[in-house]
Image (cartoon, rainbow, N blue to C red; front, side, top):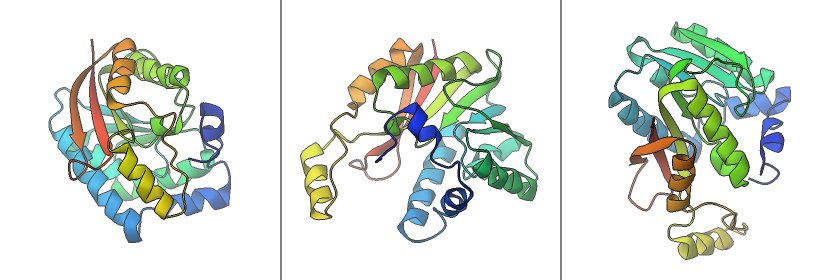
Length: 219
């Protein structure tokens, strides 16, 4: 998370062709490929349970890693990322999959879409990079504005078992980045203040795995 603690710095992360290409291949091998399998499995489980979900906004989409899962059942998908360089990979994937998908270059906190444009907003691995509660709230409110009913966001429960997680990070010579992260309760409250009801919290593995998916429904 170094250098990516707010919307502006996160937005610059892939605005470079070399970085974009590296990120596009990031989850194709090794431990990250196992992470991808866990995430895809959890996301499929979430979307299998959603009613009235025929269109999805994926923000930030990156290289379209979730496009196959999100487009299942003929869903229309809007792939949104601030980096034009990474959207080229998402567009290529959409063509390969023959998916009903379109790419839009935009910032997740300022989406160029009308109110209620999509049935669901999906956002993976974004909000834990945004350490300011006010900036997280701005993004959540924007998701609330453009979705008709659902928003699905990833959340990392870093404060759960925090002492153990911090110890393991230090063993690897890494500084634990957990100080400014919200607890699960605090994030639930942020979602509520943004106009959502927490419908479900879906894990990606064993109970102590930090990554969860919040299924949020408009109130």
